[in-house]
Length: 323
Image (cartoon, rainbow, N blue to C red; front, side):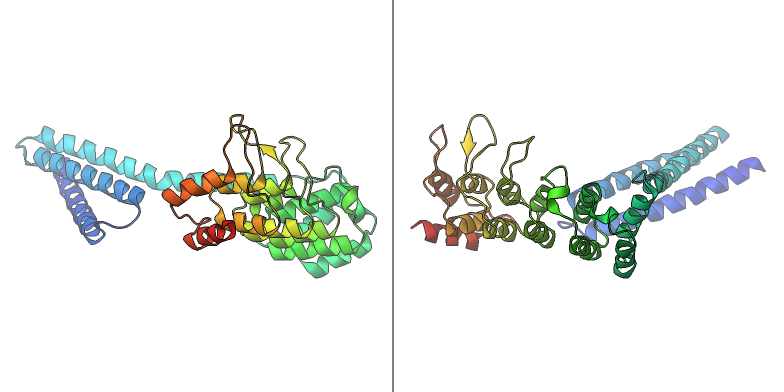
């Protein structure tokens, strides 16, 4: 009886694997030459495994003795466990990640209960509730420690950035002062990420467009050059608030100090180069090793490759300015 059950189970498994292999073959043929390379590679790997398993199981089940059937059954069990692990592991990791996130979120942000309540309300992004809390605790919201927290959270917020930015605006309206914070580098992340609205608010409230990071010794303008969102607008905003274009920073020891314009060209951010030139950047900058900004443009003109931050139309605009 057990032998018959195992045999039946084996043939069911073979049928399932055959169906899976057939569907994978159809999928492979329908997407031939397209799609994501990593996904295609994974699909081919699974298809190969399914074909190998199918052949092995067929051979073992067709062998005219009990041992072949038992061996096939063992392979099916192992494959089943393997598939279950593949299915369960990502979900288990997601569960652990959510659990860790919940534990981190539950930890107190501030030891002081009043400041902790203010922080939680700020994170909620409920403007009316936040307004009420500000009016209830007018002195606490003006503290530099809390302002630094609010600025950092406004920059890190992904789910409700507009609401938290509005809450931050209310915080400044309530009397919070930029010069109350311990570090004046809180606007650097907004410049490097390209969060225009947040950066503008901070500049309007006292942040300097000419600050230099105390650790990296880079002018904030260099952060804006590499912004992953709206780099041109970010650079233009800093220039609007008086950022200097003749500053330098050391990106690598071989080049030595470079200008923002030179660094933007090295990054192939041609639109940013246009903005800098339009605001007085020196196109004749030369590194200590003798490489000029114009040298980079000449090389790029010979071997131009478009990228999301360096389009042909921007490069053509740049060349027109340099004529």
